Image (tube, rainbow, N blue to C red; front, side, top):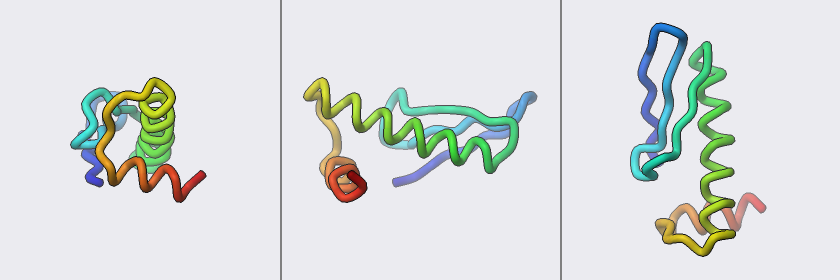
Length: 66
C-alpha cells in the first residue's frame, strides 16, 4: 500500500493512494501517519461490514491484523 503525504498550512494531509476517500491529517508528519493508519483500519472495517468492494490485499491485511 502507498501512503501519500502533503504538507499543508496547518500540518500534513495523508491519504491511501488506491483507496478513494481514505484520508486523514495531522499537525505533524508522525501524527498524520498515525491518523492515516487508523483511517485505513476504519475504512477496511466499514467496507467489509457493508460488503463493499475492497482490493484483496486489504482484506488479507485486515484478516491477519484481527
